[in-house]
Length: 442
Image (cartoon, rainbow, N blue to C red):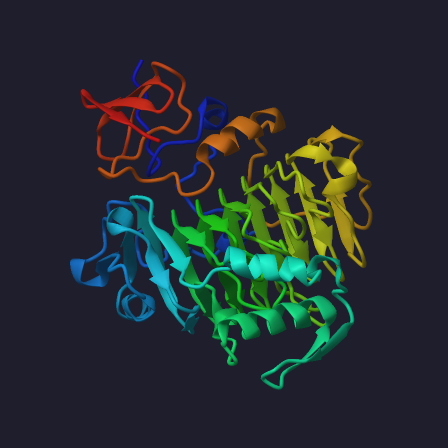
């Protein structure tokens, strides 16, 4: 029996179809302008379209970038400045970025990746650097005191950071420490920005107080969706300083073996002095995987909704970490690790643990404070389906090379129709027939 969908694209899986959960629309806090009033909505449109191929936006407002094999910081910055929809086409290789791209006071932009687009820092922690840090005993050094003055005259308070930065200066001759700016995008005072289907690749995490792969300060109503974050220097994706009403969905966070220390992936609120009333954030259907150690996320001040996320890190401890003045609503999350390594809190205002979370071992942590609620409608997916649903769909898994969007995790031999009216039938894992033509999606 045919099923004609009226939503923009296809839903996640049969189980989620029944619950009307759509991977192709913004939801959560990014669609709101109040942390309590459900009637205070916000229309998150980005640059006017957030799917591919782009429709409904005039051609002069859309640009497509391909890699030159050289530093593309200026080209990317100019494209974001001058266009509403920026498509990163990875068919010609990685987009190299010499230092983080600062975006200030931008509104109404969409950044979309296709063909495996990766935004990569040019500097990375080489094996020689890692060997030198090991030889100096940096991993066993203090991260709270015992610093000194660097060869460039900078004073550092922490022993591990001091010795890491000293060794890198001595090895590279970079007395200005330009490498510490090895991030990708830094948004300040921006609003209505959509970032989808991109892979962010950093230099490896080291304790130098450097840049994040993606960071928000005073930035609101943004939707970061179906992105991969790997090896951020300081963090993978941090949201701080009066940022508000943002959603992070279907994103993956991980580190490779070149990440050395400080695998602290997501920080919400940079200090205990953060102004209250901001930092309201939704994390939904995200995955914290290889080598993540902490901050998944750690948050201050905001109301944080943790919905149907998946935790598989084997090195993690203190994963979800509510801190001063924060409120957490935690439901439908699957922890393939013990409860004792999944959570700790310090100074939080309230934490609500629903009974529908799953832990590999241990019991659900205790709730406290007033029950935490969020001002938008949502459906909690079956927690037992989360490992398969998230694993199959998380990260930059949207938009095939031909621009066809297929039904993710659709039941075998089920036929549906996408927005273009194409008949799509799944005939095996990753194998589809679209209008009679067989395609493989990896």
